[in-house]
Image (cartoon, rainbow, N blue to C red):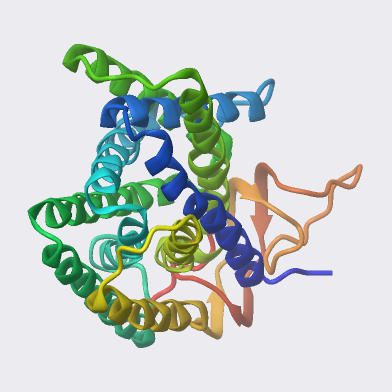
Length: 346
């Protein structure tokens, strides 16, 4: 039975969002007496560990040509973004910070369409406007609590922009093995943040908090990133970022259940705006009749999608990569513009 790449991609992105969303209030608690770079180091050390273990004894799919992109991904996503997030968590609280993380979807969509020319429907732009308005409402709420809250809010916004850059830089690597990307990105990030933390003399946490941060890193920044890359492969950077906007609501709910009650009237006003934006993102699909020219290429693929019906002897199931041929074809199904098979014009 063939599985829709949209369904698989959306479910994968939702699981990644749950892992990441739960982590924000946990990190706020575990890092309360720890430096921001030291916290980022432990998070990505955990992610590097899970990446190395998951990809052991498998063929390495990254190449030397990927090195500049990986360095930029590590700088944006594993150094700048987590440090700014921890700073924001300390200043504005886990609940507000979690909701502000919705802006990652906004920045991801804008960068994917403006810089990478990924095609997105008009309804998604309506969603972007709604979520941006939600972010503005949260900034007003943080400003009402004083300068510290506003600085914290801007720090989280900076983190979402850095992660949006990370998301778009990662998209061209989505056909590599995801744990290869996780291992390299997290390893570079942990190394850089550790060096900076020691140079700046930052405080490090006790053993219990260290283990919690490592566990958060392994799940929220390791497994979650691998699933995020798999989702990008099926539904693109813009749509994956949109589905991932569920994560902030999960984090906010966890913070609320843990007893945090920092939301003012403007923050409450942001919730329906973010919710409306997420609904528009999740309900958007792109479908029309289109033509595929014959081609030969090599990339990771499965045989339960709409494009790979070649046979293997012996039969092979699951994800794999090898040179393969596609005959010319005309068909209609839900798809994204920015993947290995749908670069056609509109």
